[in-house]
Length: 494
Image 1 (cartoon, rainbow, N blue to C red):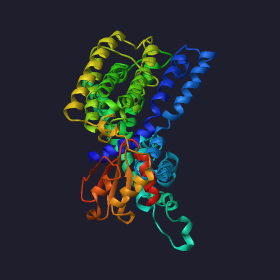
Image 2: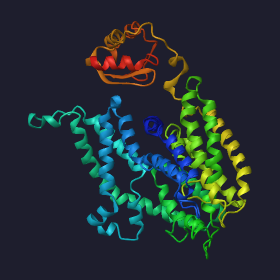
Image 3: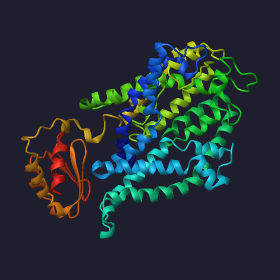
């Protein structure tokens, strides 16, 4: 199970890589144009506003469509040979499921499932989320892997092979939509019920809410809880009460306004940078620059504007137990922060930009508490992540098995990749003995039909640095960082 999650995590690296810069653009944009997020009395015209608004929209173009990126990225990443057809299939699945399960369509095909104003309507209104994006990518890649070699009768020959993948994906997506038609509102409704229970638990409830909010990020179901606490689904509306009307504290609130937002600030602004530092420190020496690029930039993004997905998706599937710990830390710090009387709100997320402008509103309280709690969050997140990564050898960015330092430093004796690939293929028993061909950063990864035909001495004579046999049919040939070129030649020969 963990290996499958780690494979999914690697597939998500492609879309995740683009998110940090988008978050930074949005953070700078909101700093220049606070009026764009509804800050009372903030200017909504002028050069600074126009530039800021432009940056917000540039970053938002990707952040707001993150689920689509996941559908395509997972579709490509989990497909054999990382073929783009899997990405197209993932997009097809996404478009079909989100359209078939949109409120308007559901209200037409199953009126009883989507009554105006009901929880179901809210549930289907949130169907375009990262969980559905990842599910669509998985459906697309599985359909590609299963049907890419399909041979149809001559009259339908045009639709053979890879062209059949999108067709099959469409059929599977329809069936998945039928299942989700009944399952999605039930899951969503359960979370709303949990929210009602949490409301009565005060500060402890805040901690539970923050924990569940982070834990549900991979599924997109955190939107259900957010609707309960931030908006007027069950009569709370913490976010709208904090900012409405024109910065005046709402009257008659039966909760401490801002309590369901305040606890996220120390974690997003300071905790994530601490966790990122631990990951960078524990990355393999040859991959530290890579780790800085992924989690370092994501930490800046989280501090500025509270966009945390670039950081979270970078490790949640590679090291899910650590993600559970990460969510627990959110719960602990959220409860402590609120108990200390800190109150702050946000229009976008719990970053420095929102804190700066929300601190001037009437509902704000003890904003100075962000300094001690923030410093504590940085230290605790760092220590916990540093300990967990070392103790359990977790595969956070820069620590993946495929990135071993010795393999990254391998230099081939010559650059005749065609000759090298030919010898390796002969040592594997020829192209007819190859059931599956793939590669990672330093190795050829193969599945063979008959393991007795594999000649390790022959393979090593090609110049390969080593051979690993994880199972009877699995063979890994260590090439080094130039493995892509050998793989390309072998793919032609096969």
